[in-house]
Amino acid sequence: MASLSWDRIRKGPLAMSTNQLTIEDLKKIMRECAGEDDSISLEGDILDTPFMDLGYDSLALLETAALIKRQYGVTVSDEDLHGIDTPRAFLEKVNSVLV
Image (cartoon, rainbow, N blue to C red; front, side, top):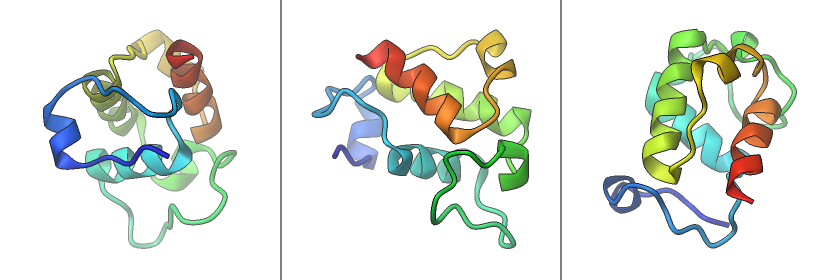
């Protein structure tokens, strides 16, 4: 499983060992982009939990998409984000491009 580090972030698009963005990778990116509400945990099975229930609004998702583009070279457009409500949907979008 690929893990993120500051060295990898600085280098731009990653040469990933698995060609898949994992839920753990996405959680790290989400925390980096928008922080984590003290009352909401990203631990456990959050794949089908709406981003709004996780405390992540549209601005946080835009920041997440921008970081995904820098790190993985995958563009998630504003239009795409309108249809992405859960981490599972976000991962499916990104991974469909990485395959």
